[in-house]
Image (cartoon, rainbow, N blue to C red):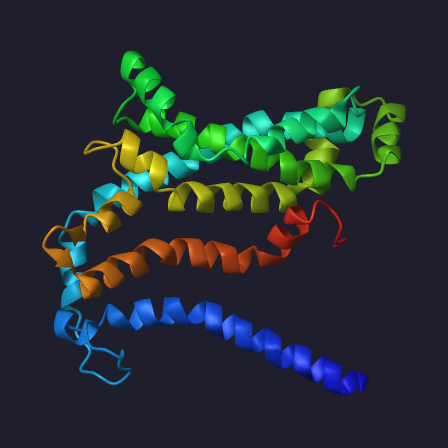
Amino acid sequence: MKQVWKTGLTVLTYGLAIAYFFPIFLMFITGFKTERDAFHMPPTLFFHPTLVNYENVFNSGIAAFMGNSLIAAFGSTIVSLLLGAPVAYALAIYKPKKGDDIFFWFISTKILPPVGVIIPIYLLFKNLGLLDSLTGLILLYTGMNTPTVVWMMRSFFSDIPYEVIEACQVDGATGLQAVFRVIIPLVKPGLISTGLLCMVFAWNEFFLAVNISYTNSATLPVLVSSFMTSEGLFWAKLSAVSTVAVLPALILGWFTQKQLVRGLTMGAVKG
């Protein structure tokens, strides 16, 4: 009975995995279809593949959009780590009074939908001259990702026994020396996976980018939306540019899946 239950769960797991991956697979193969084949219902798996959609995408100036996405994602990730990691360290190691309340406040900011604050953000950025600028996007993405850094890094710092810090103090190391020579090497995998997750979030972000950026700082998701015009949807081109857009995020997620699960479960799963 136990073996039957185990086999059933395995089949269910594979079935759900295939179901979740199927839209991505359909998007991938649609990028190789003509617009006529892309509109065929039901979708066909057998067709004459063409690269014309990818040629159109790479001739549409995608490099500039990809560059903006890379700068905004990488810049905001670095700033988020510099701001969030020390806070997570203090919450995990020194456990300040009402530390749990402070931690919950950070997490609660992720509950607020961006549409609820887009008008004050737009007016503030307009007065500060940050509209349609990469600096503005980096600031927004930093605010978006810093709670994630605090959330994940707190679990990694909490896994470090306090005896390690006491041993550093006994050996005469200062606080900074203990952090840079002992603590950071211990949490280096978590630091990298947290940074990669922040980059994926910033890379995929659309709502803030489409409202704050126009031409100079438009990111890759904004380019994807441009293929949805009043003349209709260009499914084949849309699928091609979407495949190019999600590919970096998929690769990063695949290589960091173990660390991501560990961080998202806040240390419940020990490595």
